[in-house]
Every structure is written in C-alpha cells, then in structure tokens.
Image (tube, rainbow, N blue to C red; front, side, top):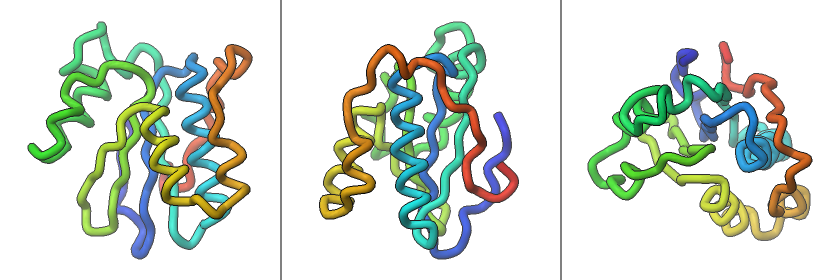
Length: 144
C-alpha cells in the first residue's frame, strides 16, 4: 500500500481503497474527484485500487482492507465486517479517521454534505456495468 503522508493543513482527505475492476469503486472515485476539484481548498484525495492486494486472499484481516480497518478507532466496529469494494474513509488534519463504508454510504454522506452543490450531486448516481474499469489516476494528496 502506498504511504499516506499527513493530511494537508486545513483539508479533509477522502480515501478510497478497492478493486481495480469494480463499478462501485469507479463511481466512488468519480464522486471524490469531483468533490476535490470543486472544493480544492477543503478536500484532497488518496486512492488505492488493486484487485489482488485489496483483500489479499479474501480474508477480512489481511490485505489493504485489513490494514485500514486496524487503523480505525474502537467506536467504528460496525466496519469490521466490511469486505466489499470499495471502502471509503475520511482523514482529518488532526490525524483522526472517519470510516464511511462502501460507495453507497459515501454517496449518502456526499448527498447530505453537499446538498446545494449541483456539480457534486450530478455524479451521485447508481453506477452501471459500463463503468467497471476503474480510473486508477492517483489522488490529489501530496506524494500520491
């Protein structure tokens, strides 16, 4: 897994890890990219897309997903059983992490957070099968 440097001061980092062949992962990436492009002073992104290393043998406690879940606080235990792609979380400038879950929960969060922003709202749609090839362009976080 590529390193995640400290979050840029004053920004929230949207992090997404998942399979590199997944319509849900691709859609989550699209939403995150639009948020960061629309509000570059407030948000940056970090992505890890790799079908083999995401779950590493389908075990929930191995691979990148397992590493990420171990970084969460005990209050976020509802994400322990998460095994699907993608997994989305926020990293705050103070180092705290807030798990959001899959693409569906990320979309709910974005829909509520950016209720008046049409540029963001228009990408919060159900993905179709034609979107399965994930855009693996690096995120906007420094050193990504």
